[in-house]
Image (tube, rainbow, N blue to C red):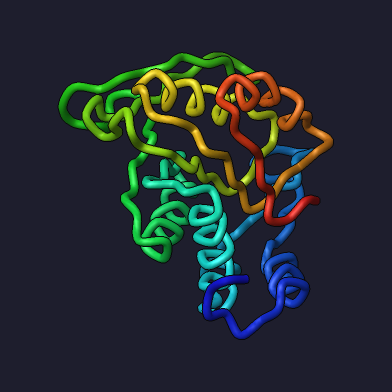
Length: 189
């Protein structure tokens, strides 16, 4: 790592894995929820993750971080602060004041809309999109395409945890290729 973390990369990844808690049958039977609350509560683990994400931001030459609602706000804001770049929230429809840009996307049972403030990004911005978990990739795909619609460049997508068995990486491949961007998962389950 290029930050001031006292841990080497292997120790950092082990610490992060230890702090992600599996919660069976939440929010419904058969689902194993990945709870990052213990990671956020541990100062060393949280700082280590923020440093790893900030390193990715610097490596890609990002000038802004877009964090996806809701846990992506926490991780993205911490990474942006550590990398000394701006932070932009990607929110659910109707949550942002002022003029917004929006993108609809499909969920497992229905659809949703994600928005950015219309003035939040500029054409010269290079953006790292950050979220906590990559599952099916629907929300991430919508945010990647929304960022591109602003004229900004998507430098990459970084997530704390990727769940490969849900196919998110494959779903995102076309959107990432269109943007010339890459996916970085800190931890792969």
